[in-house]
Length: 389
Image 1 (cartoon, rainbow, N blue to C red):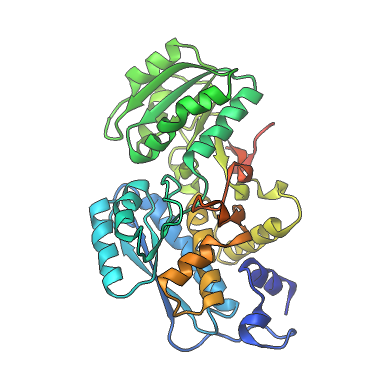
Image 2 (cartoon, one colour; image 1 turned 90 degrees about the vertical axis):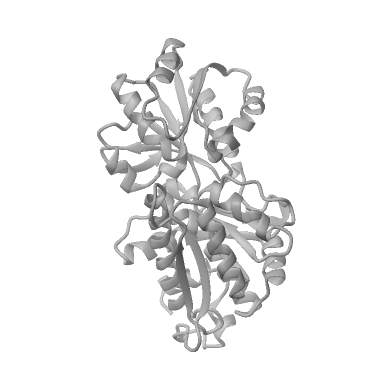
């Protein structure tokens, strides 16, 4: 087996030899037979389509990787994609449909509103719902898991970075959507944690607002040294407002915007500097040797082979699907929801593209603030780089 193939297998969390019984020198046999079906409920149309279609792209690369490394107990993996139209009610209808067809695990939705709408349907008795949004708080021990790092932890890292840079007078511009609500709920605790910071302005707006010029005028009148924006699908209006106002202060925002397509779409109005609290992949060149670095090599190699530069869209779906594959490889493709749930609940020391996972904490996501790096968009290099410390 080539060194690259060995890395692929290692990143999937289990050796090909154990899965296939093949000789150590031979690559895994091509999977055959009835495919193992998984369903992802994503916003492939509507205002969230930019993120949803990127997640779909990442899942397709992962599906190819899984099948090139033996499939699931020698059976091919096949993912089906359902479009929730960025509408929580549609997401619920689709979820009920796949559950009626016997699904034991579902990936989705992309945004917290869709996840929260589906959670009551699966929380106690399953199936396993692996939300591809970080902005939910699954109940400990429930059948719900959440992708990536929670927004409050991301905001915590951002506040810590502001304080370290000496930007002690800060402002917040928050939308009224579900994702921002998670951050808003933690603001008082975070401000108490960083006593050198002073919140000099705090403005809210609706994602449906056509302008935030009044809010930005109030923020600028308070003379903050840095601004944190949490705006979800309302981010374009905030960037337009800041650009129109001639903003020059450092801006940090949600890593859900870490999409090459978004950076290209908004390049004329992007704040500079623009910071993001992000998982390990965003500082890939600076990640030290070890299992996470190996997982990142596999991650970037897989996308390079597909001619894709991965970003936050692919990332939010990659590790959850990888963890589900790990569970099915260990338990068998016909595993029941209760078995998959128990397996993930006890999974630890699992290296993914975002860091080390340990679900024994009961937070239902396995990642912590220790897996965060601060990244900056570099318009010259047209990518994210590790931010100055």
